[in-house]
Image 1: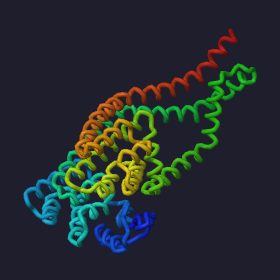
Image 2: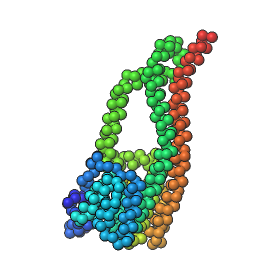
Image 3: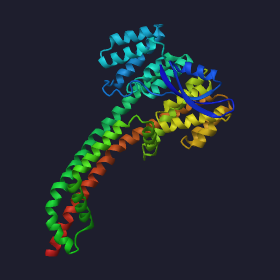
Image 4: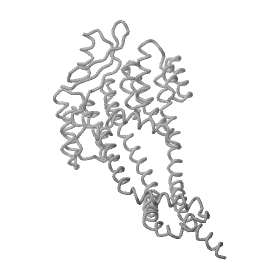
Length: 402
């Protein structure tokens, strides 16, 4: 059994929370109904295999093929367990075969497909799990799997374009930092006696003085800095699954210059598409919000949607709390409000998703194009500062001697 945490409201409207052990979320809902509690949020308290560091990573294109093949098998009338067995046998990737077998065994024990997938967070991301849950509850699992396959393919192509565009400038940037580090720790100190005479005469340029200070600091504390970097990296790796860390990191993502709006609109597009699909297939608004909030891929946006769901349960419209959270753009909120008033919210949400995806794709392509020259300029500026700091005293000394 899995331990679930819940937030609910009682008959007086007060918010209560607690934990329940159950096999599925449906059992949790039944238990809360017996207690006369109205659920606001239900989440698994822990995932049994979240901390498995040595699980093999599955490539994105392999996952896209899996989703597409599973959708085709289900459309053809093949039962879910039999479909997983077929895909497990024909998989040429051992790691994927192991994951499919574990998912099939969990489903055979009575868990839903989304719950079984949630036990493998490094393979199936939150978007995929939430969309599968939506497909199961709405009775359109085959279409959802095909949509996930398309999303996975698009993300892989996008990642390939970004990595391909960034490899060369990032390599030059790292190489440039290594060269600058060697210059400041081994080469610059050899000029200290020459620079000291200019410093005593008050003729040492400020940029050279700053370079000498940086060189002295790196020389005296180089090993401590390296140890601090390694310790910080280890700490980040250890706490990478912490909710507080994810909340902070996702907040930083939304505030990044240039990339922040891209993260924001991608999350909004995912949320609108999943919520619109759920509403179109007859899922009530509160369960639809509970499912679609995880599709944003950003904990800040997910919490904003969760708060909106609480306000809706109190009788407000969807547009009002989304506007109050400050993360949803005014034009998106206005379209949602108009959709609610005209009673065609699901169509408006799908339209928002398509428009936002197109706009975000253009922004992302522009960002990728600008990434290479920006990194090259940064590297060139750093190297130029070092060169100027070393050459200026030489020119000034030659002028004094002349």
